[in-house]
Image (cartoon, rainbow, N blue to C red; front, side, top):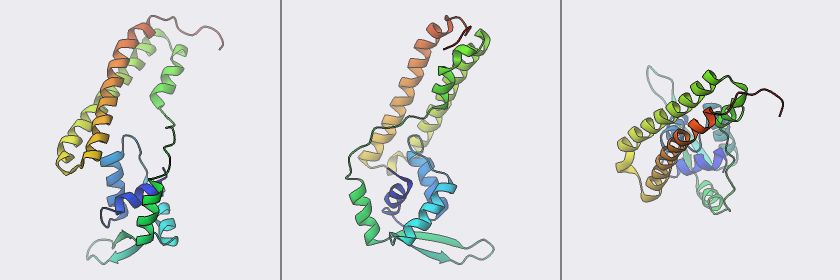
Length: 179
């Protein structure tokens, strides 16, 4: 699913500024789909050009003016059509897994530090996710709760897998040849 469709989904809940949309990405689906301001604002411009959203400028004294975006009927129809399309298999992009993949090129101390770092980062993300979940869970519908519980389960499973497998990896000799 693309950024434009997700923005339409957020706007289906009510009007939002670009900043509000970024916060919605970060605080609701950021673990499995995130977008930068550099992706959000061009998508909003395109959505406006296509007639899927409108914008209203709110004059604020002492601060920059605020622009609020609202989904149009055409935008609602398009969003509903997009979420009916077949599910596309996920493409996993993981800095952690790339570093582990090439871990054999590190010496034993570096390999140990890598695995410890991977586990620690996952624990930090889990704690942050649990904290955010507790703050927001009263506002979730059952589908949003499902996604958050999936995220937490995924992180817990990743930590358990890393802890279980890291000792086996660390017993392997460091890289000494070619692939």
